[in-house]
Image (spheres, rainbow, N blue to C red):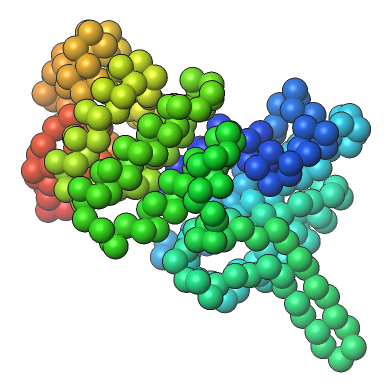
Length: 327
């Protein structure tokens, strides 16, 4: 899975209630927000098995069971697709998802296409098929991030609006230099911290902001990290050490490194996020440091600068290890 895909999947799970409120102003009247949401990712994978071709397109898709105000018997399904490129078969795929999900669950479905691509002409909203007097039309909710009003998003108190602003900024990358990009990311971070949002959601959104909008120059990664520390007084944002543990858990790399990393984290909290991780890795020994980088290279889709950032090592060190693995 590409990194952006993983970020979207995690974000949708962390702020799904805000996603519903973003698209349905009366969401609290429609859905029982006190009931937990059930994410049916495994069930969706069974309906749509992964293609054996490793080079086939990968998509961000979520299927969520939501309890309505009618009670446990009145649940519905929310299907979400995040599409980041032009695909002429996208609308048909949305329809295929619909009828397979409907066949399995026999429940009402509302579907969303979040379009995060740069193609202004790509705006799928329906699948239509007609042949010899037989016709079918499947409409679905479609949201083009490029079309979103940035000022209205800034005025919104909904955390999901900040996610859309983040994606908009990423789409603009390439139209200005990295210094300007740093300013824009910093502005978004300040905007996020100014909102009355729970600590958990701030962490999730800050992680999304940090990793979705990427710098090409490693120096700006460090500058942005320093800026975050200053803005949040090293308390509000998700620390790099928490990201390492969280990501490692997801990738099955957590066991065997927890003790060394946690010891480094405890010491590092007093000195700062980046120093803490580096001290933790040093405590875990140089051998574990290399093993950690190897596992990130082999079992995640993170790029070299991000792995270097997470492990607290030089980019050249990661490149050297990657080269040795390829030899």
